[in-house]
Amino acid sequence: MTAQAMGTTAVLKANDLQFTYQAGFSLLPGGRRGHRAVRGVSLTLGQGETLGLVGESGCGKSTLSALLCGDRRPDAGTLELFGEPIANFLKPNRRRLARILQVVAQDTLGTFDPRHAIGRQIEEVLAIHSIGHKIERRDMAAEALSAVALPVAMLDRYPHQMSGGQRQRAAIARALVVEPKILLCDEPVSALDVSVQAQVLNLLLDLQQKRGLSILFISHDVRVVRHVSHRVAVMQSGRIVETGPTTTVFAEPSDPYTARLLAAAPQGWRGADPSTVTDHRPIVAEREPC
Ligand SMILES: Nc1ncnc2c1ncn2[C@@H]1O[C@H](COP(=O)(O)OP(=O)(O)OP(=O)(O)O)[C@@H](O)[C@H]1O
Ligand SMILES: [Mg+2]
Image (cartoon, rainbow, N blue to C red):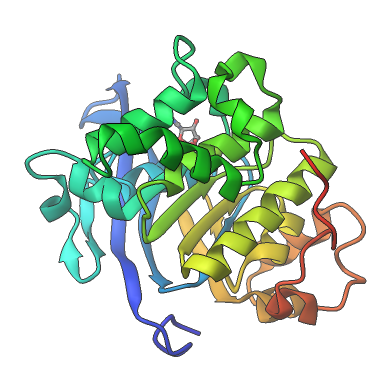
């Protein structure tokens, strides 16, 4: 089912994206030796939907994410946000893109500046985008932390003084402070233990419902993708081999690779009621305090 068929507008549309890492010159005559990490990927993200992107390690998920957020330029193919080519959002700088599209990565320690407290880093994002007056920004940063259920005292913590789950929430707070329309989450919970994973996933689902965010949720963990996604795209060796509503893909995979991926998933997901996905029921009902 396409985003349009779900009755939503496409906020992101990729058509036949290709990307090769140039890894040096081939000894063979005839050209360069490179790794074709993304091979003709087309996908659509609808307004207010979560599209799960799942596939084994090394299949090209993060490379695709880098293309979708403008960090890398595709060798071929087109990418539109809200019907405009992505290039329009990158000129004269990336600020216009950052207002509508934010990324939450797996390595939150690496994405924060270790020299500054979290509050200051959120205030800086607000300043870059000229959001609020200088004196208001501290309060805005505090509000952003409360939205992800972090205490205001965390404003003065340095990244290394936070737990992985707290830092992941802070990363989500920093991403959402500019009120983006699209969130690209690349393995946002993979580094967290199961109970903290559940907290962060619940938080994302809550925020999505409140703010109507569109989320591309990337994970190698099919169970996590199943719980958060309206639709799912399955990636293998740089290609999308199957796309569809999560319930359909998980109940009746049409591609043999999807079937193998699901069969290899840890026990537990198969016996569950597929309707939990469309209900968006969280993995744990109660959110634990951080
Ligand atoms: N900078 C790079 N130069 C050359 N090859 C790279 C580079 N980055 C990634 N690759 C290769 O491209 C392929 C896709 O990598 P990518 O990081 O996109 O995979 P992934 O699906 O995100 O994997 P994971 O689930 O482990 O994060 C891999 O084979 C990887 O080795
Ligand atoms: Mg990756």
